[in-house]
Image 1 (cartoon, rainbow, N blue to C red):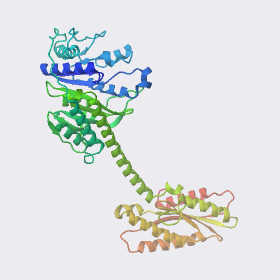
Image 2 (cartoon, rainbow, N blue to C red):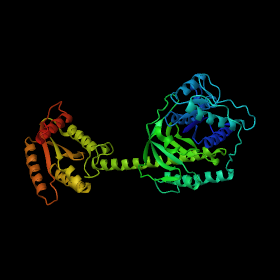
Image 3 (tube, rainbow, N blue to C red):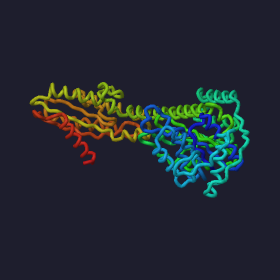
Image 4 (cartoon, helix red, strand yellow):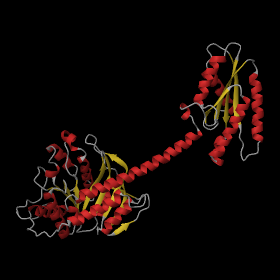
Length: 484
């Protein structure tokens, strides 16, 4: 049987005593106790001063699951910073699960009131778990438990400090192999004698704000886990677990107590930590410090992976741009590969040429040249070979159109413009291109470097634009290629 204890925070001295009593009851009754310190519900009016404290309340959503047989909710402390209506709305989340409130609350069963003076809050915690076990089985409260002697011994503060420093030394100085953060955590927990713990992270960070509360993801990835002393090993992808089954997966051992910790950064939920509740955890600020270190290490690990992914993507983009400077043509006028003009340079020079020389009595010849084999060359023989093929075509265009302007306007496409004195030059250029194409095909090589081209001739007209000439030439090339 699993009993959930929903509290504000373990740094509250009274709450610590309640946990001590609840822990002893779990042992005596042979049930699993899961402590969920979700801190305080925040009202909308108080969000300016709340910072991100409200993020801890996301832990309470893990109590909305069939994994629990009964819940004990310290609604008085949890809701001490909000309105009655919000407290009522919070309690309604757990409909369908037997719920006992730690103090009297309208509309809900509360645990038996404790009248003892000695160990009052420890006794209240003991009574709460005892009542929850009985209530889950019988739907009624049992008689009041007799006063108990509590034997819980806090761990040594010096030992706790050494543990925190040890964790910080390993995490903050990255004394573990790349991508082995979770394994390092498991090893530290095992060395500290913790028989059950785990780090679980969402595949995507879940945004959670006061205005737009999160919806708990359906699945969470288990990055590391020790369950009942067994260190579970995972491959790089880890293990995906339903968030409805987190409690039943880790809280398996009757008579043991466990605690959840929230891993978040700013507005985003990153995941949770599950741990066996040991004596050291209740030492002042020990648990909070451990959680802060785990959160920082997980965040750092996540950012490093994102950085590596972004770096790889940048290299891919750089590689792509190196093969097709259609984006880089806005920077400078020269094509880095051929030494000729790029798209920007071609259009700039072409406009200048037309403005200066395309006058009545002159004709303009516009050509598009497409390297139809370039993609296959790159795919089969690599981009270096493709670069050599591009340079070879640029040499041909330099020879054929030496008195004009040419440029590589896309990775596998060139454009040319020539202003000629006589009509009929287009045909001579076509013949020369045909000869050069045949020569290119006859060259000894592992591949065919074949060109498809269109050369159109335009007489001077007052309103004829470069855009119109290029469009007609491109459409003619598409017809040649069979695309129109």
